[in-house]
Amino acid sequence: MSFEKVFRIAVLQAKHIFEVKESTDGKILPIRGIEARVLELLSQCMHFRYELVIPEDREFGQLLDNGQWTGMIELVVREKADFAMNMIALTGVRRKVLNFSYPYNVDGTTFFTEAPTLLPKGLAYFYPFDYILWIIILFSVFMAPFVFKCVFRNVYSLSKLYFEVTGSFLGLLLMQ
Image: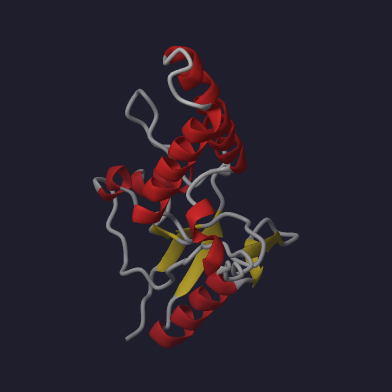
């Protein structure tokens, strides 16, 4: 299969993706990049010629409020280019005006961190809460007997109230 037509292809300069240079006669030539290599392979395998077109606004393309498109999308929609290449994001709005090829590159952008170390199981009771909350809880346990002593007007001794409050707190903690 051979094509007589010279395809006009909208591209943008993008490092490692599609790098181009302008020749002395004004033609835009691919230098390197993954998309440039894909285009060269397609051209060789399907026996077609092409010329590259860069949009004046140097944008991928977005829909303006007036319904007009910008960038590479505009070039294809207005038939100033036959198709566009440059890892163009497939969006619902763009799908309404363009036919996209099957995705040939999926970018699994991610991040990573150092794996956390295992925490000692003996301290598992303390993990759910921040240290400030534990300080407040301990302060409350130590202050509660004094509050109860004032409320019950010396009916119970301070040591008995202390052991009752501490025992109740530890009992609730151990029931968990």
